Length: 99
Image 1 (cartoon, rainbow, N blue to C red):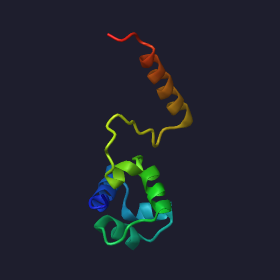
Image 2 (cartoon, one colour):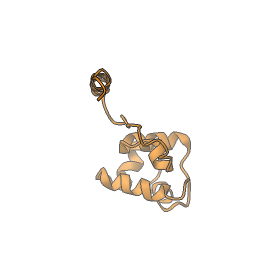
Image 3 (tube, rainbow, N blue to C red):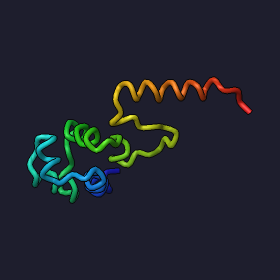
């Protein structure tokens, strides 16, 4: 399950246009520790994993490779108002008559 964690962390960081230095500062660890996480030499603690997932706007399930529920939708990175809007849209779809 943790085999691709380092690759996913690096990919998420790059996709967010962040350097290792920036991420290290944002979550409060050393630059070398970010490197260790991305190369798979170290596994981040749950606390650090939560911070990374939040910063990268991805779910922890994604980072850990737990993609068993393809019907889930990650709301990570959305504001409270955005989440409420998504919930309203979902309810509208639920209330549509089935074909």
